[in-house]
Structures are given as C-alpha cells and as structure tokens.
Image (tube, rainbow over all chains, first blue to last red):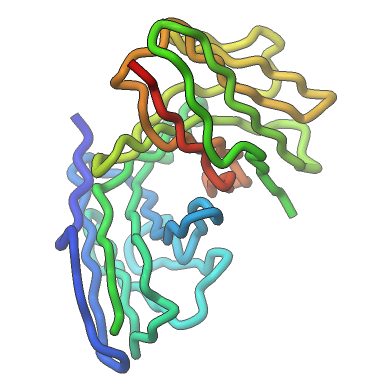
Length: 115
Length: 113
C-alpha cells in the first residue's frame, strides 16, 4: 500500500511566523506535489518536484517555497505566514515509471489556520 | 491554459439510486488523461476511475462508470446503486503534461438513506 503522510493534521500559526509542512512517501516515487484546497476552488498546485533537489513552480507559488533534500520527503515552507494562507494543504506523490498510470497518491492533508 | 469545470457544487441522491456528476474541460492537447477522485469526509483523497483520451471505450470500475465525450470535452461520472459510503467530495481532474493535474472545483455528493 502506498502511504503518504503529513506531519500535522491541524496547525495554528500567527501572522509572520515561518511555517514548515512536511510530507513523506514510502513508495520510492520520483514525483511529489503540494496543493492547497479551498472551497469552490478545488485543488491548486503550489509546487512540484520531479527529483531530489529539483523543484518547479505550480500555479500559485507566491508566498511559498519548497525543499526536497531526500527522495521520500518534500517540505512546503511559508516564509512569513499570512491570513490568506489559511487553507487545507495536500501533499501527493506519483511514479514516473508507469506512463499509463499518472495516478497521484494523496496524504491526509494539513488544515492550517493563520491568525 | 487547461481548465476543468464542475458546475454542480452539490448533489444528492437516494440510497440505491443512480447519480451523474458533470465535468467539462478544455485542453489543446490531443493526448491526455482524465480522472475522478473521491475525498470522503476527513479522509484521504483516492482515485475512483481514469480515462485515457485515445480510448473510445468508456472506463468502468464496478458501480462507477464514465461518459467520455471527447469532441464535446465532457467527462461525467455515473454512480449506480449509490451507497452511504459514496458520500464525499468528488473532483474531476485532467493531466496537464508531465504528470501535473488540473482539478475542477469539486461536487459534494450526499446520499440520503
């Protein structure tokens, strides 16, 4: 069974704090993704990574950065949290080996509240 | 830019009945994949069904099937014999090159006992 875990289910931070969201997958997947989920907007891609130390911007990267030092771990960083970053954050991973699959496996999500 | 639109924010159905969730998309690519994902309350998102654009035959997974209309860029999900466990948010998604997914806004499905 593919397992994607996220460091926290719920997180409350203050405006201006630096926030780290951690994601770990145990299936040796090459690709990892960070999304934010907001009501009425679906999931929007923040950043993704195809390999260790590689990262690419998604559709809404402003205010976020990422780090991938090990293949199984992908971190999302909010350098200075703001109230408009209050959201559900979902991590996902997928394999590059199966060109007919493209299935992404999701973590349980972190509900971040910035006050 | 590729877009996915789900025009039904909420749907409800009686247990054991059939319900269809709508999805339209826009892409300039000829080869792509479409997906329906399910997100149960407080649980992880899981893949329900996938469709390869080059395949004319509609995908089926047990009680779940799709109606894929490539020319119309439509990709609806039909759930037959609805069960209480089908209650969830359902997201339609399109692969956007290099394994990047583009999601619709989601449809919240309620099952009435």
